Length: 463
Ligand code: MN
Image (cartoon, rainbow, N blue to C red; front, side, top):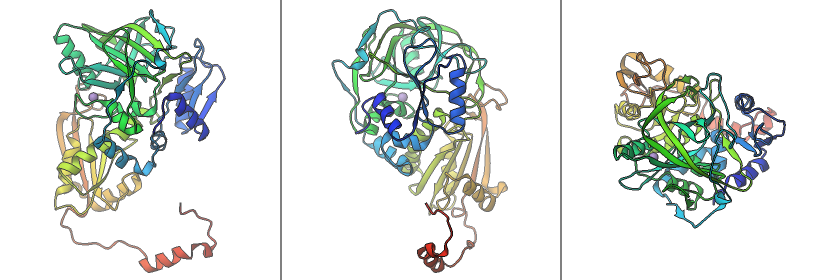
């Protein structure tokens, strides 16, 4: 079974040498961000800040900064991550509601978000302090179905936050549905939970499907939820901090700018506003945040990749190409802008169909397909396939003015979301081309050399 709560996860990280406690006092105004940024750039440990100016509680930054660390948090091997996640999608475990839990240790009837949890300003030019790593829970007014996502939240006043929820996200659909009924949309924020609930928020599956049921599968046991005090929402019982409130109907106020995971600042615009009504937290809470920004490939990139690769893989395997072997949203491509699939033994031309499948996603700008002898997590091999198995005149197609990710500033009408897409077929096997021979030494000699490797006295690792 997976971790029970955030502190159990922290203990495991520390035991594995993956966590560093920072006892030096740091300012929440840029300094905390700068220390986290440098640690991320150096692919260093998860940080637990024990002395943040203006705060009595410890603060954990960026627990999911590599696929290896995500695999660790789910108790599986990194190479098995995609297939493990596919199995969890097929075997979800709905959450259960329990009477109470540690998130109810302390009740705060009059929360002040400008004091607790400590407000953090991240990037030069940010519109204010932001809460960056809260599970934002809403319900559909028609069905009662829960949705959980992570959105950036600007702290505007002690009890007022700006909520930047993209229109295509399920949280925004729920807000809009309540708004059409003329009513505010209840929400709760769960901050600091065991890893699976955080990772499951990045699922892109249908509106109405419960991210917490995926979380249950990922951790191998149902998530325990408790009811909120002032809104009709349930939250993980073991959460460190719970903030309750309502997204106001028919209210928009300027929100942003904020430095996004794409590496660029994203602009200021009228966006929904939420009022906070109540807070509960554990007796000795831990605040959990993330840093994103230019020059690092932060948790959003890692988490989106980990969650979306299995869903798209599963859809393509079911609908287009049963012989798909792997699917990768590249790190440099900010987990979605660049997608690569490998396929084996597919009918002529099917590589292009797989490309069209990947490109239908609004986030994907560049799709590449290769044969399954290429390791698509090794960019040198992907480039080799493009260099040797792809003709730009026949194997590349461009789709102008499609719906793309709105955060891509190279779009001619930015930030309209209108952008072009490119598909690159770098397979050999689907093109009816003449067979070519790969250069190599005889297989039997490779094998006998391998068996006798130690006798050559060459200090290389084959691990
Ligand atoms: Mn959803």
